[in-house]
Image 1 (cartoon, rainbow, N blue to C red):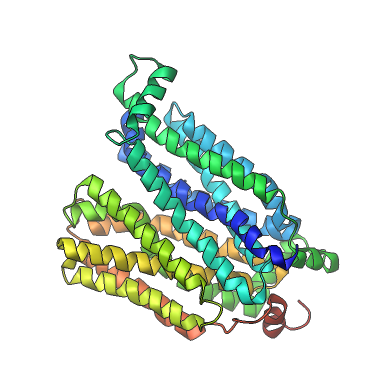
Image 2 (spheres, one colour):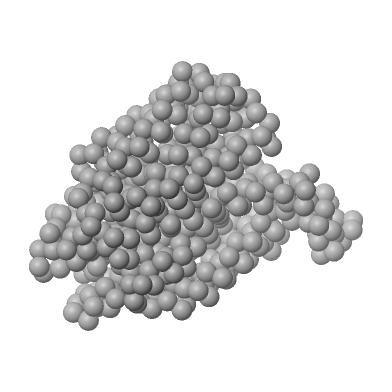
Length: 443
């Protein structure tokens, strides 16, 4: 693919991040409606979260998709994976029972995981040296747009929302005028998932037109390694093992905080901040606006300014937010707004940007996507476990919120210190140059 097309291809592939984050938020924002409709228990909801795009579903998909992308190509993933995503979303849209809903969440989650390693790898491999960071930021911006739009749609379409009238009319037209109220209201969530189906179809159409990564094509022409060979290389090469340990540590510690906030942020606003559900959802949406704006601003400078500056900047905002929480500021409206802005800024200049960038730079092409899939599997899997632990620490009504905040600060400090110690110097270098410096001429 011509380098001049890197922005176009980045935009097409970045839609995967929109679909990833959008699936997580669509699931969580409509979960109460599904609970009322199907009469679900807390245990049912726990399994939905555990097998979704937010946790094990994506973890399973990532470790499969990463090595498939290294064996069969990045375009192979783009050609077929979103068909799986659309199938999962369609199952959710048409769900009439809990097993059907759970299957839809699982299929969607697996597809999200399959797409992530191939997406970040393809963006880096198709970027110009001086635009690689910018393109990863564009991908990250799409990750912010997903929740922002889905939360906005959710508010408009939810019972009592401005567009609930048409949703209600649609529901009665399909299931009858005498349908139960819970069956009518859940159509709000069905329509939100329908928007993801439409975006997935557009993304699939665009991505099918992309050419294969030139770096992957060149690598496969010279090397015929099997998936098993690549896995062995990944686990036996000392440089690769150290890189996995470094990247998994910074991404895990940051993501343990971010994943909890992604799922529990409205709940935290309601229990610790005393806000209404409507106000909590609005602030969550506003936080994502700050994510998008911050990432957009950083995209103009990330290839020109030392990565260290933006890495520290994002984590400093996150640490300040949680230190304010420990000081009790979250109980005031002003404090809640400051927390919302700081957390949005953190996500906009997040560890995830640099994990995506370095993860696609620091491994040779033969197991580049597989390494990312492995790390994503570790992080999303442990995040699922942490989500359960967090609920225990936090308590039913936020009584353990201060203790939880100390845990968040400790995790963010680990991400900061480890990141500063192990941060690579890759800015301005080609992927081939980085690979030769780290692994020698044989890779």
